[in-house]
Length: 67
Image 1: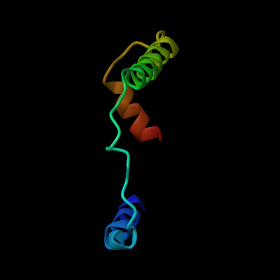
Image 2: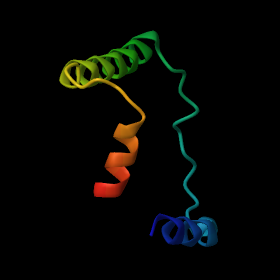
Image 3: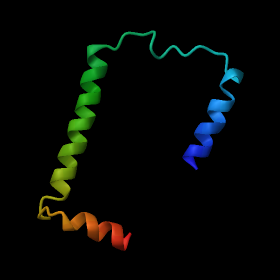
């Protein structure tokens, strides 16, 4: 589905004439710190949530078979 959507957007890219300003603005230090904080909090939450689960490679196989 994503590939079809991507190919549709690539085929119609000339229709979208507005220039994006995302890369025109400099990235501020505060913005970078906020992104780093969100990433760090997500990693911490993942480790906190699954701290009682011992890691093993079998967990990946169990997920793919039962999913």
